Image (cartoon, rainbow, N blue to C red; front, side, top):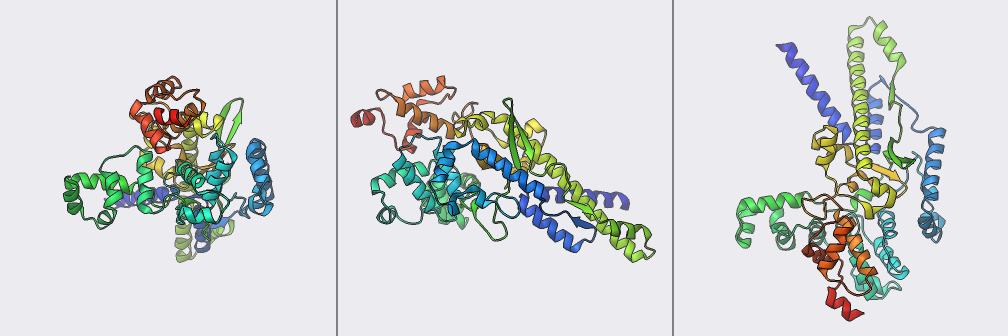
Length: 447
């Protein structure tokens, strides 16, 4: 009985360790292994980077640059110190990513005139570490060459970009933007607009009384709100301990087939120290043998957990690449709806495992460097497969920009359906409103 209990406890410990390592980002994992090597003599770390790995990283990134001539042109207009991607290659072989770059790349898929695009970039450069635009627009207009009306339009576009919530003035607006992005217009939206302070204090009865709801309804709305990101720009923060984003996965293309590849395939993160392994087998001191045996078991357990982490991560990445092949071929306008549950079902994993696997992991492809979580989005048409909400907005804007005469919302909905994006007239009107595009009559007057 005692033996069975010991095995069960060991199994649980291994599972917990595996889950812990699975949700670590690359740099967090490397820091963990460095700390492990300091206290476990059995852990013999490999050199952090070899010349060959650095050369491979540079060549890979050069190929990525060559595939993005339009992006290179913009970079060439900036100072080398500020924008040259190769000058940003870190000592660990990683590529620095910033919120500004991530937002700027999305503009290339949008048909914007240069002044408006420059104004959006200006606002993107003015965001704080949270992704908020704390400075008021009149002040930003005064400090720049951009007129106030242009900055107003630029701010509307900025707030349409990923990650959802950027460009908000405060926490309430940040959460509101994220709820609108997922078409949540129920109690959660009212709470973030008017009762966020009460929700933070868990004063559910008070909110329920003010909104004429049940306490359970308020709690359900609170659960939705807690799933949002209060600091959407924080993922790009340059904390001292994590100064670079290291892509975990590279996407290669050959003959139209996209394949996910791990950043450091085929090599373990460390070796078992040969000297202490021999000492374990040769020592006659029971205390020494017990100590080294314990450390060997710990090291081997970590190796197994890391191996499982890499396997799970690569499987999840390939499932994303397979499901979002259009994105890797055409860009964000081709992003399809995808849920964590979809990948979990495909791979036979628990949804929480997929969630941990994609947390703080990054994919580098010809489109740029993206968080793996970026590829999960809801369908534009609730409950139906098709085009994701972000792609549907881009498609709708393209239809409106190309119209010879203003079309009705119903006609736009019909055209979207023909393009493989079945949405209702009401959804078209909602997307128009979010992008501040006038209705048919309003556009007719402006013509």
